[in-house]
Length: 195
Image (cartoon, rainbow, N blue to C red; front, side):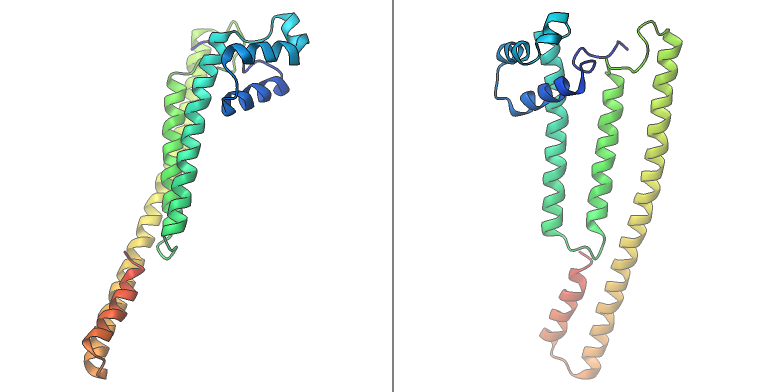
C-alpha cells in the first residue's frame, strides 16, 4: 500500500473545498486547479496543491462513495415509503445498507493508497495496520450478522402470529356467522402485515 493521496494530506479547508467542487462537477479539472491556485495561494506557492491526475483519482473515489450514498439513501426512502414497520423492514434495510457499506470498505481497503502510517513504514508495519483494519471490520460484521439473525427471528415470529390470527378469524367466522367475503377480507388485512 502507498502513502496518503496528496488531496488527503491537504489542510481541512482546502480538502473540503476540493471535495465540494468535485461533488458538484461545476468545473473541469483544469478549471479546478486554476481556481485552487487563486483561492489558496500559500499552498500553491509551497507546491502542496494536487496534480491533475491526483484530483482525477480522488474525484473517482469520491464519485464512487457519493453514488453509494445516493443509492443507499434512495433505497432507505423507498423502503420507508413502501413498508410498514410491523416486521421491522426498515431495520432489515438498514442492516443490508450497513452490510453493503462494510463490503465497500473492505474493497476500498484492498485497493487503498491512503494509509495512516509514517512515510518510512516497513512492510511489516503496513501489513500489521491492514490486519488491524480487517480485524475491526470482522468484529463489526459479526455484530451485524447477529443483529440480522435476531431480526429474521423477529420477522418469523411476526409472520407466525399473523398466520395464527388469520386462522383464528377463519374459525370464528365459521362459528359466528361472518360471510366468507368478510372473513377473507379480515384475513387479507391480518396477513398483509406479514407479507
